[in-house]
Length: 298
Image (cartoon, rainbow, N blue to C red):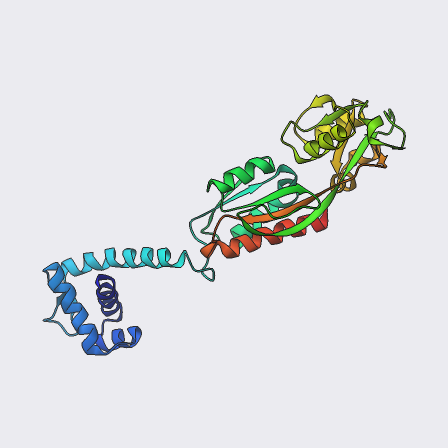
């Protein structure tokens, strides 16, 4: 009842007319008048100077009006949170694997700021399995997760598959460590330049090598696709590089792809949402669009 009374009070102040306030609220004049009277009785003060025509807010009425406008605005913002058709507000916390951040984060941030300038955007990069754990703990509103193909949506989440990309086995063109075409057992005898433990590429490779009764020979353990490509190009080991990096990087000319008869790797990308997105639905849709287009460009 208090909010209804405050809405009537604000409308009368802003319209400077009981008639226009009633039209704005789609109420009768008597209903608006009763709400003003009820508010005055509740607060124990007179909110209007009725000696003037039209009545003007009293000194205490002017102060109450300022607070009521802010309160009603905050209440409207609060009530909009569960509605998917409402504009995003507050903060939008996004988790991305580094490889997806490389191809989509700039476009995501640019578009999000243009579409929703009042939205606070937080973009965090991490391994997919850690992003999934943090999403389950409520630390993110949405995340892009990477899984070896074919894959399914992680249990307990809502979301959609956004696309996939191929990961290539590469070596130095000038100092090759392998035949151009070979099998995984032979590659297991060579050293590799890979991301640290937790990387989806590395985990898939380790599983495939161990299935052959072999063990991975890790030569260099380091973050960053660009530095890995330089190290592989220098003959320091074999590498796993997404095809879109090979297509775009000037280092591609220094590398060659190794065709592996019994190993291939594609990574599926899923957009995963924590619970009901409410008024972050449009932000989630923009995230999906940015990632999908980044994969298509790649």
